[in-house]
Image 1 (tube, each protein chain N blue to C red):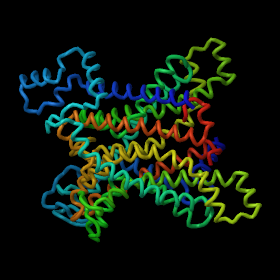
Image 2: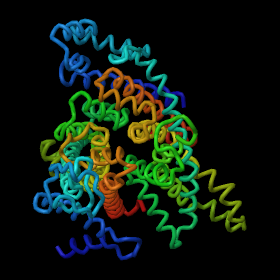
Image 3: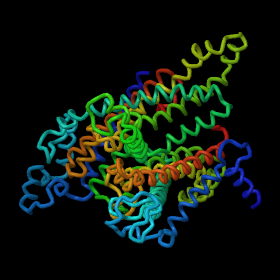
Image 4: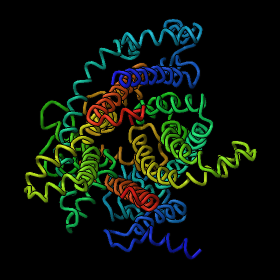
Length: 288
Length: 309
């Protein structure tokens, strides 16, 4: 246990003193998760309460009894409260779409790598096909058909991204499947579900977790991008991407609307990417 | 080489076939696409008439075959809103997107490649951490935010550049930078690791031992060999840039294919969206193919492992 703790510490606070320790970025993400979870308690006012007398107020304005710490938007809603609620959308969409695409992609990739034959051919050709359509275009065309909304965005992102996991799971499974202990348990009559779950999956989870971390950052960007285009989570639900899109229209007279959600997005994605990079360095030191 | 080429062409055709099938089925995800095409005020008769006009009352398999025939003859159908062939609409918007992508590629290569070289050669200086940080930041920056920040700074506050629209060279500058930033980071990272890779090789050490000057070493040996991965990712970056244009064009109201796609989704002009997606997939498949060919051309060992990548 102490060994595990110690290695965790070296992952997050490397002794080589290179730049900012990754622990800082872990804390940023943890902070955002906490704020998102406690948004109803922390938010100064309801994120959807409009205050038409208090429209487009700069940060720090006191208008009609409400202090707009980070300013207000075009409908007089409190930007800080909306940022807190927006974190819920960003984090939950990213988490759920990573989970869904990760599970689907991993199962299919492992099946392709272990069963080989026609299963492999069919699954991997489908993966190739999905990877031939630029992800953002595939997401847009699917949203156009399904319609926007919280659940649909998650489904669309999962549909677009599962091939990524399938490729990695497939490659990793190929390299593990021929290990003596796997062959032994096949010889002892273990079914393929048991082998995949007990012998192969534990060996490929490390590689998959790196992919999942990096994908998480990408999913945050995708969700924000779709919401920016008006194809994501629908108003009045607060979403960082949608707030940026509004901010773009008021860029000349209300800089704060686009600035703060942008900073949040940037910090979240940067933190997740750096954690992913560090995780990847740690798990395969050769790549350094 | 010939068998590799043939196999790779076969793979591309399979991918193309699959993409068309996928697009056809996505279109049918919600059942009848007529509802996507008619205005929201349409009556039941309008819907029936539309369904018949589109041939959607025929068996699914016949429609599937027709869809293939039309798409392969570059007939993407007619825009429901504008009543003009989709091919014509795309052709009118394509030059803008190509212009933007070219500008972005220029930004990415001209900044990214020297930056990567610099980062590799001056490995352990105090300022390399800062530069590496900039590269990482560029990778995590949502294009729609960096775009807005630039509009805010150069368009509104300083008033140096037009904040949006098209028409002059000045209009192209900010969108190109916003779109090129991510690719710039990719080029810098690939160039850096490629140069580091070359630096550790024996010929560099022996050249140094022979007393070759650093400048000559970099220009004559290092650049030439580390350029290989950089050239082959360019094909992949081009399809990335074309896809990324969707958001950047919306930010800057740049009238290319990306803005067209978003406008068509909003106005429910599904045939146009489908046309752009098919074109995007075609470009991606072609660029992947080109990247593999380039790669195997410069490094014949690749061909041995069959798939190319």
